[in-house]
Length: 460
Image (cartoon, rainbow, N blue to C red; front, side, top):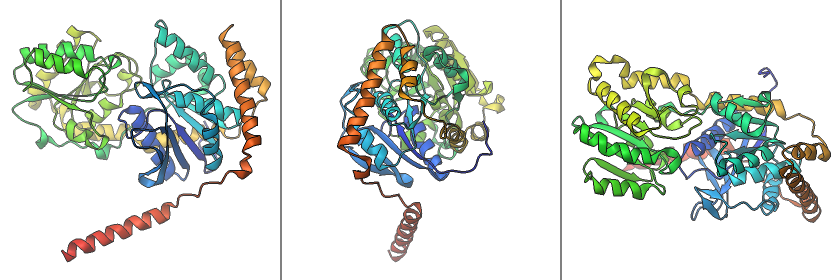
C-alpha cells in the first residue's frame, strides 16, 4: 500500500452490535481505533444497538458520537435481523453525518451486515473487520459463512486481526487474499501497568476475565479449577465476566466447597479490568476458538504469565516466554497450569518473568496509533475506487450459489429499489446535516473545568 498519499480527512461510520458499555475485544477495538482515527483528523461516529436505558445519541470521551438504536437482542448481544427495516434510519445517519466510509465489525453482528448492505445501495465505500474464527462443519458456521460471503462479495476491503483469521476469512468467503489486510488489535499500555504490591503473597492467584459462554471454553475451566485447587493448596482463582455459563461455575464452587478459593466477580467494567489483573500471577484463557484474544495482551502488560489454549491466532500474539500453551483439553490445561504455577512460585530463578519487563515489551509491540494509521491506509486505498453499476453488483451476488445466489440478488435489488424510494420520500437535501464537533472547544472546556476544580480545592 502507498503510505505517501496526501492527507485527506474522512467521515467514517463504525457499525457493530458490540460496543461500549459492553465489555470485550471487539468493543475495545471499536472504541480505541475510533479515538485514534479522530486524533488523526478524521470524523468518526459509531452505530450500535441500545444497551438498557442507553438509547439515542451519546458522546463519549473526545467527542466520539455514538448512535444507540433500539433493537431486539436475540443471542449473545447480537440484534434480531430485520434486513430492510434499518435502512431508513441508517440512511438518515449516513447523510446527516456526511459519511464517506462505512466500516462494519464482527461476523456475528447483524447491524454490521445490514449497514454494509444499505451503504452499498447508497454507493458508499465499505470495509469489514473480522474478529472471529468459525468452522465449516456445524450448522451455525455454515449459515454464518453464507451470510459473510454475501456481505463480503460487494465490500471494498476486509481486515482481519491475525494471519490465521485472514486464512479463515478468505476460505469462508472465497475472497481474493489481496483484498484482505491483517491489522492486529492493540492496547493502551499505559492503562495496564503492573502493580506488584496488589498481589497477595500468601497465594498464587490465577485470573480469568472472559465472557462466560461455551466458545470461551468455560466447561474446560469448570473441570480444571477443582483439580488445580486439590493439587495446589496455595492457589486461588479470581474469575470475572458474565454469561450463561456463570451458573455452572457457581454450582462447581458449591459442589467442591471452594468459596474461599474461587472468587466470582460477575461483570467487570472496562475501567476496572486492570484492578482485577494486577491481583494475579497467572492469566488463564481457555477459549475453543479465538482470532486474536486481546485479553492475554492486557494481562501480559500487567505482568501476568499467560496460560492459554493453542487455538486460532493466539500463537501469533505473544513471545514464547510470556505464554504457556495447552491443547483445548482438560488434562492439558491442568498440566500447563501446574507448569506455570511452578515457574511463578520460583520467580527469582526466572528473571524473564519480571512484570516490568513484560510491560515494556508489550508496550513496544502493540499500539492503537499504529492500528489507526494502518486502517487509514486501507481507507485511502478504497476511497476513490470507481463504483460499479448495479448489474455488476448483482453478478457478484449471483455467483455465491445456485439457490443462495438468486436469493441474495433479490435482496440486493430490493434494497437498491428501497433506497431509491427513500430518496424520493426523504431527499438528501431535506435532511439536516449534523454540526461538526469542535475538539478545540471541547479541550477548552475541559481545561476551564480543571482550572475551576483546582481553584475550588485550594479555597477549601
